[in-house]
Image (tube, rainbow, N blue to C red; front, top):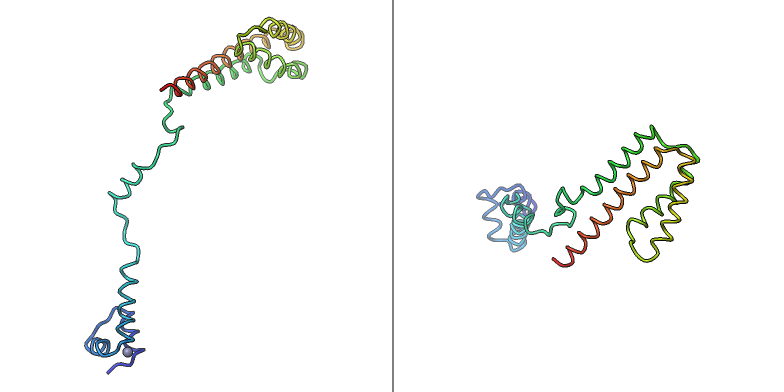
Length: 170
Ligand SMILES: [Zn+2]
């Protein structure tokens, strides 16, 4: 005849030999212990079912950026390419004089490309002055760079705006 402690140790080790079985059948405490062990064993996580895992992955919502197709990134890529081309034409970052003018000039050009409203004339006058100043400071290649960046940036803005409108309608 096994003691309670011996019987419970044997149960925890997965043994259920004759002595243990006899003790458990006649001892309420050890029967409860055996039931608890069985419950714990059933609650232990099993190996994941490959099919269930795949179903969960397929049912989960797709992020917006995952649905974007390659061509929707083209305007951004083209803008970066034009920017890089301009840098190459300038053979590096333009001189400090040109850099100082660049933010304002670029801002004016981008506004010019994006707005196309009544005050276009005023903006154009502003960007014309910025362009003239930039030409004096950075030379003709700075102007070429600015033009390419403006074309690329304007195209990117328009393409993104069109896509946004299409998404809202669709
Ligand atoms: Zn017992």
